[in-house]
Image 1 (cartoon, rainbow, N blue to C red):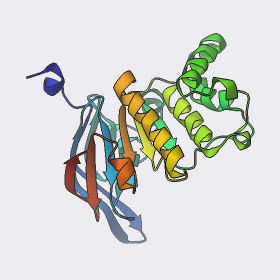
Image 2: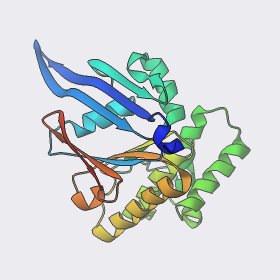
Image 3: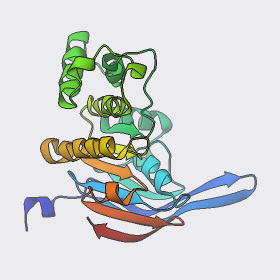
Amino acid sequence: MSDAAAAPPLIRIRHLAKAYHRGEQDIPVLQGIELEVQAGEFVALMGPSGSGKSTLLNLIAGIDQPSSGTIEIGGVDIATLSEGELADWRAVNVGFIFQFYNLIPVLNAFENVELPLLLTGLGPRQRRERVAQVLSLVGLSDRADHVPNELSGGQQQRVAIARALVTDPTLIVADEPTGDLDRTTGEEVLSLLEQLVTELGKTIVMVTHDPKAAARAHRMVHLEKGVLVDELVA
């Protein structure tokens, strides 16, 4: 058995359930989820609207907490962490990529990418070096001083990817990262995500409704009404 095959999964989810309270009623969103993701794997979460895929992504990212079950990431059960502990854990371990970029309009590309580093102990020189490295990686060194409305949609998403990478996180979560892009630009962004996996060894969990985007992942996980119904190797 290879070392990769013998290695424990980076993400191990067991008996996961999530329900939201609406008045006196509990609304179940996820039920009995069992999922493992290896380090360096690119996984796509698919399913119709309301299937629970974004909820599952938020739970994996430590944005939300489950009603029951365990979510072990790198051996840490994040379901047991307090809100403060989760915030500290996210700052070190998770990079976020969103459909609509979530860039700060008044900050330029460099400043947007630098934001997560302000929560770390890095000094100004180290921050500058780290930001320059990731902007170069996504091909935007020449756009560092441009604010978001001076950039195309694809360039803004590349800034968002650089921001997700700048803390060197264990895990990258992407919520419909190509949903606001045209097909050609979306393909470029997906190629960049593949590069993060193959060249940097990053682990990516991506929510998408697009089968062509999902096909770029190593594996597709399909949810229906809060239940994991299928897993396919892409």
